Length: 507
View 1: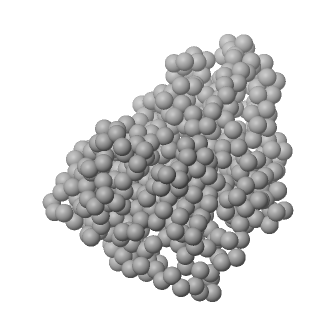
View 2: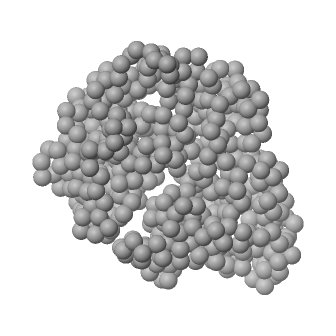
View 3: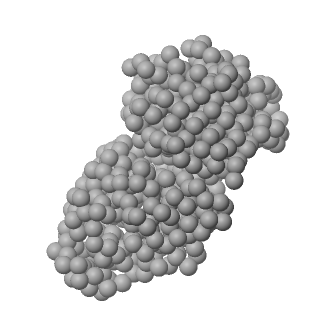
């Protein structure tokens, strides 16, 4: 079904994209502006080239300087940004974007359809971490300065969502092809990078863009303080060194609750084991589904959820989230803990002497790795740890450096989930695993009518569960905390709030 989002959306949605400046007066909800917002961040960009942008914790950093074509509201709905409207046609193979006029990049270059074309073509050749989002775009046409037409090689019902992320971040065409874009971003966003007050590995500072086209955000300056250690982030929150930050460990959340910090629980991720090497390219035993099944049923997921996550989450055996067409409630408890069955499966597969390398990162509670390692040792598996440093895990996994890993990724709608984690070109399918029967279902999910797509989504989910492509353990409760000086809206499908979701309270 063709999708059209007109510019005349609700006043609430359009208020984020209006060119009318906000008043600086205070009201009963607090002051409209404040001097500084300090956010604790787990990582920093390796490059400010918009084509190299990644999602998750890095999203608000890129949003500070790069406006996307389409914006995602806190509830996950789409609203105009640099594109005032978008319309799908030709069975979701053509998207026509109407563009905002009167917008300039921070170097004075005008934003227009030529800029859209330059950015998308640059994105396609840059081979960034989310490069697969643009692979289906064959051409970008510019019938006039305020219209861009994207021609796709195949239907992509999720393209508008991709345009809210790396594919949609717009940088100045003059800067895109230069080495300087890696360290000095040039966008049309609400802020510009303050290089003099930015220290690699310590903090990133943004100051207000005085020529921003739209509503100014509430803060004159935003600091991202790089705090990779969970305890350091918690202490920074409690002491007032930062105003907001994510806490992954439930014990940290309990401590933050006791300290009077604010938060709103929500679920964005599924978390568990990724069996990347399903064809056995680097680890031959993983090609046997019985080995993947053994490693799955050997994990006592309920004990980990209760003891490590203190019950903050929901057990699951599927990667599709509730509320999507592909979700099936009966698949949530398929992977039951059974170490004796796991031992028999390894014996049947001739893998009694299985050895596994388990990558480890500071992002997750060490107790999670301890529990999984012990569960696997209990069935006779030899486990060796590979310690990753800050910034290493996602690039390493998406390059296919490791056959197996523990990870958490967001739960999107059906098609975005498929293209992100399951399809042969998916960034979370680094070994490009594909099966003919699954390819046929993916085609139906991509190009069928609503009923056909919904049925295909359910079949894809069941296939993935039955064949142990992943070993989901739970949907953990996300915990983003902030102090009383700020009010924060959590962001659907995003580990941290967008840069637009903060406002001062005056406390």
